[in-house]
Image (tube, rainbow, N blue to C red; front, side):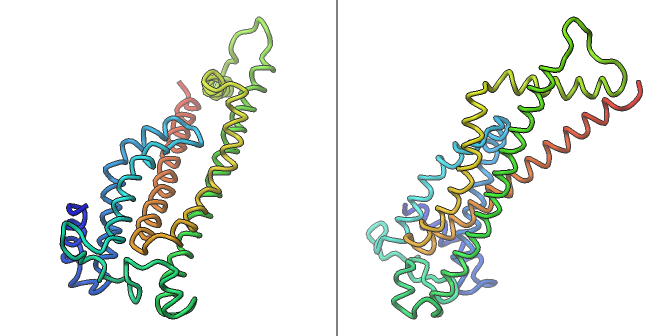
Length: 254
């Protein structure tokens, strides 16, 4: 933990000329971004699994980092010395304080309370964004599976593949759908559909966690959840762009 404390303190000193008393808070955000950049290859590999639970492994690997962050801003001493991080702030709120501490100082709309309300508001926006995208992703998977099932049931027995541009395009889509059906059984599709509706709502649980942990840990949660949603949005965009390019190549005349 002393290594982490030293690293965050040094990052804070580098940012202090620009951000003054909020430099350590910015250092926490920067540290979180560095952690997520290191985990990005795993996130990409998890995304290729195309399941609502994709990305769980990177999240699990972050748990030790989160616990270190929690301990660093909850301990009065680190390595036998006074914890210098506890004296740093985000605007009016000490990074080691919890929401209950802020309520005791000035109430819900006091100077410290407003900092926590801003944090909660930002987390709620990210959670809502995650929920919307999660439901859309689950609906897309269900629609693709249904289309593949319909295409398989309508294919005439004993006939060859359709000809022409439309046939090639339909064949490409059917092939993709067949791949999905081959990999995912009907029972698995139902489980995926249910998970796709529930998992996005778990993002709002971050609000509860942020209300009981130190402000520094709440900043970490906000940064990492925002990164997760933005990362999946970008990966999904790249996937859809690649699919459109593949369809355009199929439609081009030979």
